[in-house]
Image 1: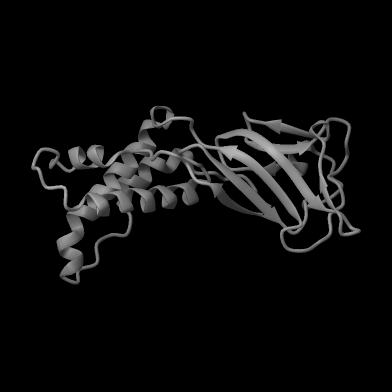
Image 2: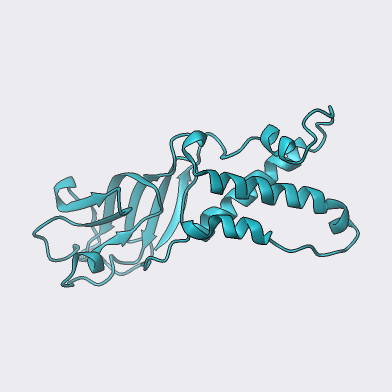
Length: 201
């Protein structure tokens, strides 16, 4: 499945001022680069979100797939569809049935686990419904991410600050044609424990 943000978050994990303080230039009165810093915060945030399958700021995501996956399986974890962490709620599960009719699953037909960040058929059901195998046949809309910046793990925020600061400090080298390391190794170490090794549809 492809997990695409359909309603953007209303805040960012870190602020421009926090980045400026990280770089030691919060009181120099020069705000000319604030727009660039803001753009880099967004870019680095998206990069770490894609790396870890973790949405840092609360947002609405839609998972698109050509089918639910394997239809009849024997174990609950094999029937589960993993969603981006941290899962807050599932708004709806829709699919196009084999007759081409758009259907919305009943809330009683699936189980949402916010602890495991996944959705699976409800207890007693042996499979997902049969969906027509075509692009975007299955659509799962859900809310993922932390409700405020204060709730985001400190190591993830620090990784963003560190990476944005590194790019800012490397700017003269980039303009001179020198290629710095793409992502600072220290930042990757900070997010290591948040990598998602679950199987994805």
